Amino acid sequence: MRIASLGSGSKGNGTLIETDEVCLLLDLGFGIKETIRRLERLGRSPLDLSAILVTHEHADHINGVGQFSRKFKLPVYMTPGTYNPDKIGMVETLHKVNCHKNFSIGDIVIEPVPVPHDAKEPCQYIFCHNECRAGVLTDLGHVTAFVKERYRCCDLMLLECNYDQKMLAEGPYPRALKNRVGGKLGHLSNDQAAELAGHFDLDRLKYLIVSHVSEKNNRPDLALGSMKSILSHWSGNLLVSSQAEGFPWITL
Ligand SMILES: [Zn+2]
Ligand SMILES: [Zn+2]
Image 1 (cartoon, rainbow, N blue to C red):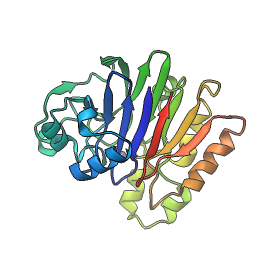
Image 2: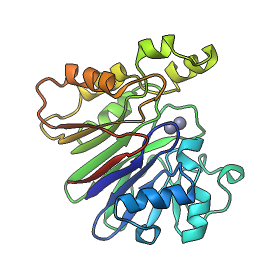
Image 3: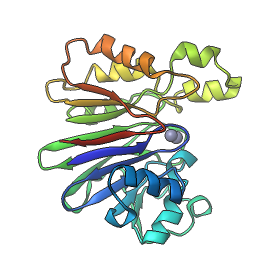
């Protein structure tokens, strides 16, 4: 299984998960031209894709989904609550995800995990192929017991480190938005993410990719610092997924 990112952050998200059989695009927050440019950077074209999956209906995750699905005849998987035709429009084929039930696309088994976030029916996903598990976990306001349990044993984790508490408190956001981001249905702080990472099976985890880092309320070095303080004995690869570049292909 191979994973790469088109970009990560509040201006747009997109992650590729592929095997020799299928290539899945998780979330699409970029327009068509920009998406094609970012796919090309990773050596892929829209014609290589098998399906689009969506985590929730916020603009940075769905901006390009409807248009892309229609233009390239791609089926779309999402929870019923996530599908808002006023926002996404028609899609090629809509597959409704039951967020309590695993499903397969080609040779990838997908485990949906419901998360607390201020969207209609948000769910994140774990992608399994043979013995490999790759977890994607962004856009959640706090860590539930269920989240902690589901994501414990992964070979690769994309984990949200949205904000540094001090930078959010002292930063430019209006009070209401600060409360939303830092609230129980907002985003994970560096410290919340690091605390969760401390519960991962670190003998198994090979890659931890810091994701959805706020450009206004965080800095990559602060997020990495929080992780390193918790994971001092871990010898895996700690990376950052950026808004501009995402990250290049990782093979598991
Ligand atoms: Zn987001
Ligand atoms: Zn969101």
